[in-house]
Amino acid sequence: MTDTTPTPREQLARQLAEAVAEALRADLATRERALLVLSGGSTPVPFFQALAPMDLPWARIEVTLADERWVTEDADDSNARLVREHLLQGPAAEATFVPLTSAAETPEQGVEEVAARLAGLAWPASAVVLGMGGDGHTASLFPDSQELALALTTEEPLVAVRTPSQPQARITLSAERLHRARRHFLHITGSDKRDVLARALSGDDVRELPIRAFLACPAAIYWAP
Image 1 (tube, rainbow, N blue to C red):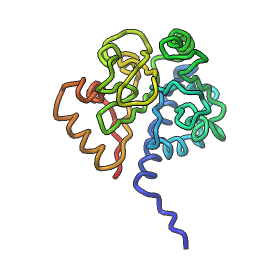
Image 2 (tube, rainbow, N blue to C red):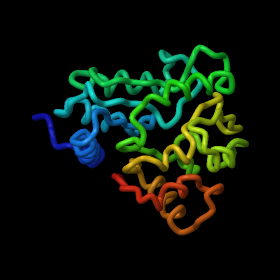
Image 3 (spheres, one colour):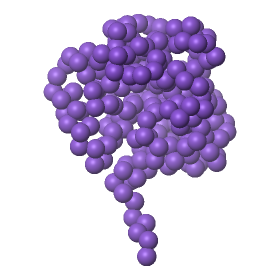
């Protein structure tokens, strides 16, 4: 007999999907459109899969990303590809997805075009779902990025990012634009991420652990082993 009991991470993904769906429903009761900002990586895949079949007016929902590698949308490590394959399926295929890349060769060259594309979305976002790396980064706000100070302080919506620890150039929503969201969710798994979060909660140096910029938003923390 096959064991169909959901794992703790699957249970967490379902709980997060229900919370995000409720946030979207609440805003759509008073607004024509609602915006959802998502993060990439492997952690959110079960969450995307749990959210995709939810009973929502998807045609009125806009989806974009907190950050993206400057790669083509069909690249294996493209966050846009991840969203298209795991979220924009079934009912959720009716959502409007706005990626963060363009045909420009570099994010520095493409940032203006992408910012213009984002300007027409339903800001402030109804929800931002953030992840966190083992170095305390979130979105593409990396501790070793030369653009970190700019991304933390600018009022511009987007920042092109170069980070020594990462192989690709990136583009990220600024901290200011992420802060504007009506609700913030932090989705992490594993004991290592729990330990990093504990460190982040015990200090206030945002440049050491950039996730600290969002822990006082407040953020609803979703964690599983």
